[in-house]
Length: 259
Image (cartoon, helix red, strand yellow):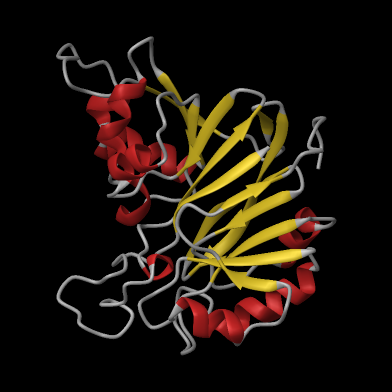
């Protein structure tokens, strides 16, 4: 299994529009962050988690020519508003997309033309929207289970896929969700900035969560322009690192159905 970080930035992206801070004007490619998303590849299948505003550019940059489906974490604009660009992946029929009941309800309301019975199909995505079972589903030959996390006042989904878990946009992890995160090789956690935030983990909160989860390695995502990559990385424990756009993680031994 291979994971590609398609984007690692917060809702503004980095650089932030109109900002001339040192991170926003940095020439270091690791300080340039599209909105957060990952690509999962296993056994010839490809799935993405979330379709943010740069989804088209992410697909071009990663040279993606086909997808088998999409997992949605939640329905905020920076994670869903690139949905129209899924249409290029629907040439052979509707594309399967998955999420919580709340996400699927939002898709049916905000993007009814993509998931409903619309007679004017030209130029539109054609999607089959599915509520992902709490017990999970087989995704690209690996069992994928939703992991509830708290994003401000909202309960949203992270996902565990075999030895890997992706928990973007979370402030806290419910006690019952920690049991779903045992025995991980890699976990990805939301980390916005050093200062406290009402809906996202700050650096200290993410480090504490990483230490409790106990994965071999933790990577941080959904990073704002307040964190410069090299300086931030040097300030973290040795097994915790900021992710960056187009970073690759390979899991050569992934097989079977259950984490």
